[in-house]
Image 1 (cartoon, one colour):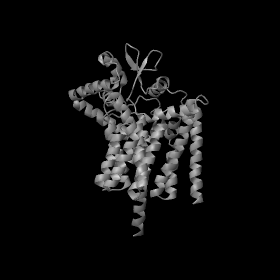
Image 2: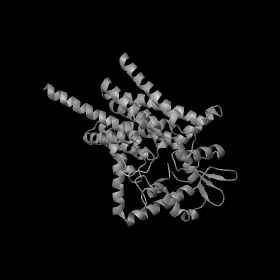
Image 3: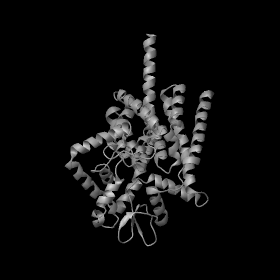
Image 4: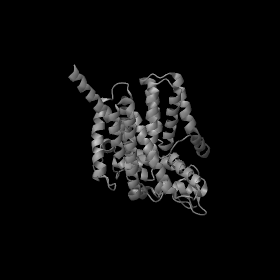
Length: 413
């Protein structure tokens, strides 16, 4: 027992050292892009919004004097509130970017520990420690915590979600179910599309695991409690119940004549800049804009469905394996692409093996493939696959353990 504890401490120590090295060489120094605009506008105006109205046009921008921030539902709010909360706590005592990254490093270490706990529930200590170590040193897992990105927090929440989901399946304890439901709500607030996966889990519990009605009500109640304040905020501002409003933009970005697997936003900027000027500059600007983009995307899809079906299959392949024509910087760096291809191939076949049955790994297989089916509707960014790395390694570990045990039984008998 003591040896196992020392081994996990050693893995965590390696995790600290590798992430500190990444911090000194690769860490972000500013909060930019969408997060930067949202953070600046929230601090400057008290409004969570990415669109700024200067009286003539509306655009994604940093708000300035005499400009108005339009309330936003473009991106889920949890990560920006995470950064904003840190800023409120530290004030001007410390650099906000460095503070966020240091906290993310600690969160990534908690994720390693949580990943080990999930593995150790099913497998031997040696196997659990081995694959925890592999998980902790995958280059992208070292790199992500030192970036201003929601992925680190997202992975931790997903691991907590899976950890308590498994406990719910194997223990008649409502306390586990409450925690599981709360983490589900938090995941929805950090990735809006996780609402669909949470619904998928709901139906999985009903039809596959035959869970009692009382437990389903607990599941719905506590998930709703977490999400409802943001839904209420949106209803008061936009007069409709909405979590995020980027479906139309994302659909168009991934489905137009010049799109690629990773999407193409430049086409939208060049071809629709003038067409969107008719949209009224009020609180519902973002919602009306997204509805417009959705309509344009549907036109393209209807006009040439065979072509977009081919593109869908390319995106599906890129999600499960790799993008054969990526333009992302360093995408084909050996430190990124080699682990990605190896994990992709092994997890793909592992997921197929465990599609049948009613086990925790059956759920992971369904989660894995449903993610690929869903994201391929839009476009595939490299970071989309990162959230699935713990799921991939769990499936691979179970597959290796399954065939190892099968071989032992065969030799024994």
